[in-house]
Length: 201
Image (cartoon, rainbow, N blue to C red; front, side, top):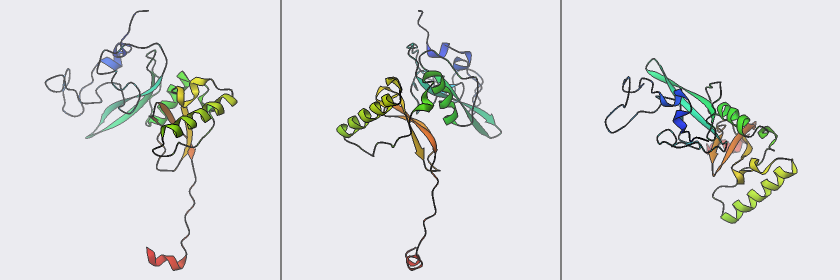
């Protein structure tokens, strides 16, 4: 198979749009190869493969989900659109979205089509030891296996976890070598404050 670089997989990954920041119509925004972001579909900085647009990286042939974004001028502001993509084969979703969660779900449909069967779990505690992390990953691998999921779905193999979130923290993301996908929002009940405690506020 002939080696194919990421930016050559689709014209909208290589052709620069007019810059929404400095007004450059074509080529670099300034000297020394500098370009403002958002001039073409590019992988967002927090997703796997973020450097593929800046170097002549070659596709690996091993499918892995990621998210691309595009900045589109809207008066004196810009709107960001997102789409799911694959680092292994260069695939991109047909649909564009206003949020990255939906774009990631499109990419996971392509790479890990049974991802919605992954059981909802708790996140690993903050700043765990290596032993705690290894034990947690082993427990999740066993749990996924019990649900009939292949090893590639487990976080230890670059798969995912599905977690419930509070209303202000619903963004799905890539961290520690796996995807943390928002599975829903936990309803928070208002905390009742006793009248004698009101003086504390």
